[in-house]
Length: 219
Image (cartoon, rainbow, N blue to C red; front, side, top):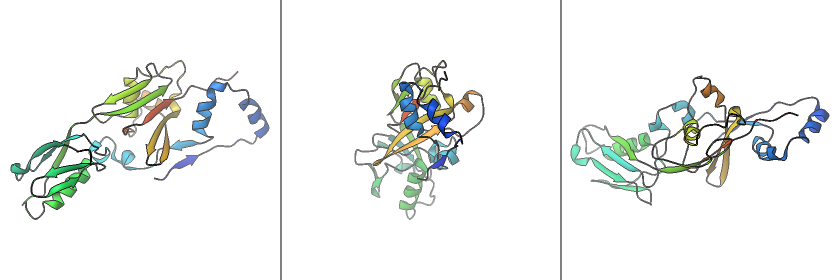
């Protein structure tokens, strides 16, 4: 996954260093996350797909799927994804589902049944799904949010009571995501959302942490 960084530097290095040393210790976490640069969300399926969650959200174990074959209703099935990430389909047997988007699974099933059906049309619908995300920082009710539907970063913050507007820096909301053995960081400007400006929603993945930093206080 490509990460894009944008930084700005000042020629007044000495002056900058002097006032940095005067910042409150409570800003240390913010400085660590910022690391001198703004991490922009990469151009990915999340950004390109917009609100089309069929192309954004990956399926995971325990998701309950409704799989329909309009040309052959006898193959229709509703079942959870097992702990091994598999589902069991009539005629073709075990099929890997976890880690794929619904659209990707639809394509795989259409290919598997291509010699048995006159129509390759297959639909995969997520009937139910629950997963945790975590919200911390300048919000009214920090903690774990359990969602049973695709949820955006902004929606999760609203579930946590919304921003603490006396302290929250809406322009630098950080999403921390564990991907394999790597930790990815995305910085979102949610002030634009509050101002009613259109933008692609950032959908969360299970286990994501949202950190809303405090505004920098100048003395």
